[in-house]
Length: 512
Image (cartoon, rainbow, N blue to C red; front, top):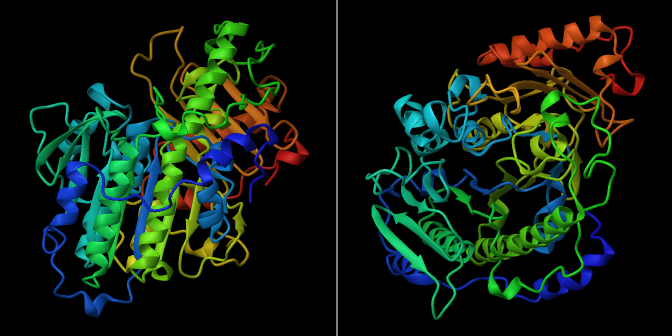
């Protein structure tokens, strides 16, 4: 279990006393609960014959950092202590839409084609036009007999067009957010747009989504049909807006004052970082305030987790349900002078939390094997006994969840991709391919610049070794990155499993 810093324990105490199970909130949640007998389009005729298939719940936060897990007491006590925590889980891309598309399809961005959050190379419209929606983890599991539900955020741009009632294939139940927000938002609830606006009574979006999820669980559990829920709250995406009950939490929390925060010397960093000005005291104070607001906003998600576990237990299906908790990408809060941004190749942005609880997963386990968001869809399919399409780049996580030694043919490096809307802008961060191993990070920019970090000797990524490392080593890593950015399906897995070069100039602590 993660250790919670002393200076935030007083704020944490304000949260743990909250009721675990949220009641039915808002007209949308009430409507779903009231229609518990037959609302869904998914049938249950084959439910009893599929009783051995586990339920699967994916809880996907937005812009959450790995370190944020320590401030979520329910997640710690109900998921971390009862499941496995992954310490080397990477986003396929440090951006919302590309990462979410990877989770739905099990592909790297260069294969599913969603390269940015919006515009000509990103967003929900492109995902649809490319035909990606015809085969996602939702369609695979639905074909395997699952009742499926998306509750929360889908992909960037959903609901921005006139087709607010559009429901993608594969979803038995749909509560897709069309207008994002915390106290003012809109949800397409099975084809009916429902608008929420806090007035006399707060209707916090996380609470509404929690109520919708609990209603779906209770309804589906009664049928015996296995289910899959993609539950995606907005938190802690900015502007962070905590529920009123959490506004006084974590009063003393401040960003960790590491050397990476507002890094003093960035002369070894690529040009786009060198152009970033140092943050002043007022800016750092503002970041501290935003950091607290993000943590406060996550407390409603923490209560969501507690409520879901309570509902699963009440329904008698907790032990036959996998709960997967993660985020779409990380977030930078002043590290290396990158403030309130996603998209960089640094640890704060590319590494995300992943905790799994469920049948056969050892309680309190820690898994260091290199894993990626492209692994989630094939993992869910393997649990469900569903067919995994040949186009999938990732691999099921069963071999590393077993508690035994990591298989010899497991991946040696994971790919992280970032694409640029304006690749010709010299003052903007260029596109990159990054290779992340358990011990090092190599970044190959479209500008020709490189970064190379020994994460054991330099976990804060303060010293870029690209200027002093053996050129032959950097060439070998660049060649591997080039191979990865054009791989597909089984080719990706084969390339990932090849041993990395161990050439003169490789830092001893960075091998392997």
